[in-house]
Each structure stands twice: as C-alpha cells, then as structure tokens.
Length: 192
Image (cartoon, rainbow, N blue to C red; front, side, top):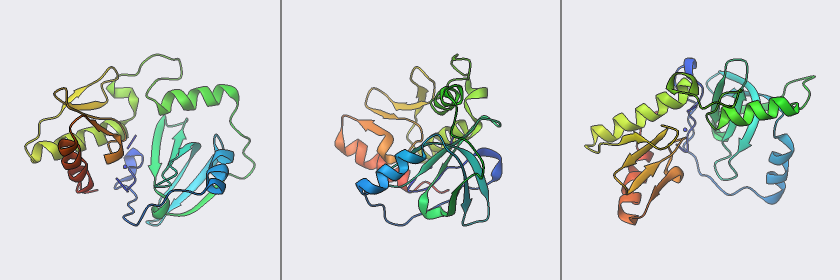
C-alpha cells in the first residue's frame, strides 16, 4: 500500500502518480456519488499512462484519493484524482459479493483474507515500501523513527509522534503542535 497530496500507488509499476494541485472538500453530492461507487470494480487511468484495476475501497473527500484493492495481486493502490485521467467501472462487473467485501476490507487494513494478521512480507509491499521511504526520509533529516504499533506499520518518535499508513500529514498524530507541524511539513517535502 502506498501517498502525499500525492498518490502512492501499487508496487511494481514504478513511480507513483503524483498530483500537487489544490484540495477542496467534496460536496455532499460528490460524497453520495463516492458512496455509490464503493465495492465496485473500477479501472483508473493515470496521466502517465499507467492503469490500475481494483475494487474501490474508499475515496478521501478532500484529496479525492481513491483506494483500489486488487484481490488477485493482493495489492492496495492509492490514486489521487488530479493524477488520474479517467475513472470508469469495469464493463460487465458485478458489485462485490459479501465474501469479496470482507476480503477487500481485511486486505485494505492489513489483514489476510483468512483473518490472520499479515507479517511484513504479506501486508503489501507498497505499504512497506512507503513506510521505509518515510522512515529513510526522516532519518536523512536526523529524526530516527521506530517501527511500532500493534500492526508494525506505524512509525513512532518516542511517545510523542505516530505516523500511520498511508504516511501523510493527515495521518500524523502528536500531542505537541510544533512537532506535528514540523513533521507534517517534512512529509510534504518527501520526493515521490
């Protein structure tokens, strides 16, 4: 699994689709449209020519980041609206069955289809790759983040800062506003 007003897309396809334009809150009509598309099989074409196909897990109403889950390859892709050229349903595809929904949910939150917690090798190489990229970026700036949390996907700095997947400014949690602001700014500068 892998994003910054950006997208961290799925794994073996090279660089992520990146968008640096403005983000505005979605209207209630847009949110209703997003809700009607959940658990639908979609094909998303990026501006750089790459295509991703997967089940729509969620859409961020601010950045319009789409989270697609590919059950066949067991990957999760984060794709920003500004980096996408076209979003279309896969012709002839039916909505996800109840079992597919369970599998989509479990894969999207880092669990295997059988309900067991996944280790680093199975969580999704894109998530691990993004986690390691963020950790290396902070280390380059002399901030040593530890891998922690019950899922081993969180990055922590003592008891003060926690960064959760997808490792964006909005997924930073800190009880010190100055530390939070600096870490959020540092994440925003992370190269794709």
